[in-house]
Length: 318
Image 1 (tube, helix red, strand yellow):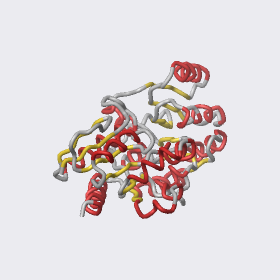
Image 2: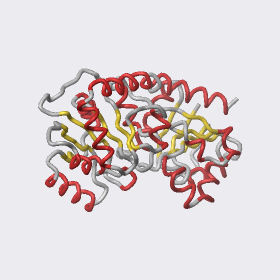
Image 3: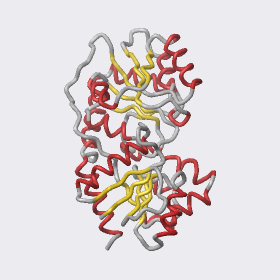
């Protein structure tokens, strides 16, 4: 089958949409399909369209439906689809969703945000992570915490930096933030915080191939986002045996699990600091988070993701 995967993110982008599109493309190729990953659909022949992001790919979906009114269509829902555009532009977003034969969400609470008539089309497919080296390379002088994510509003990118000012003087925590600034203003603020807060270090964007080394040197990873569609860095960290400290938003709890002990109230750097100090000072608590993460990591294998995609395609193309 010839499958076209549309993502609004350009080829060399390191955004989540492009990463997901590339990974799905590779998994579908491994299942025997002929796959093209592109930024838009115009009128090219294809047997199946997978469009990432309902709102941003609306034009491609409309063009596909005009040419192929009965052909199979899958829409992968982005975090901003359900958290932003379903409210700010429901007409466009719902038109795309209603056109789809199936909707994919990356965590299991997305269905709660969808109109009831779309529930039967919805399926959760967890993003996988390749097996990363779990051998650790800790600097024993520090308790290293990583933040992996670009500097933009939805990520609440400096919450971990601000939490460092509430840590006790005896803490060995050092925070390294990996991610590009999406504007000069974000970059300026990151530099200012790095200069003002001795525990915080903004590293900028790093090559993808260096990320396994980041996990290997990290005692924990913080994701402080205000909204998420199901971040792949969470899957990666857990597969790499790195505990995740996360804001208590649906995009995190729906991915990790509601009964996980590593959540803090969104936007609350004091609570985050208390949680960071607890994982540093309470070995039993830290190990409990790691053990929980090891169990969840079983759901984030490429084999499971590949099979889930194959099962969905088989279901809608019968």
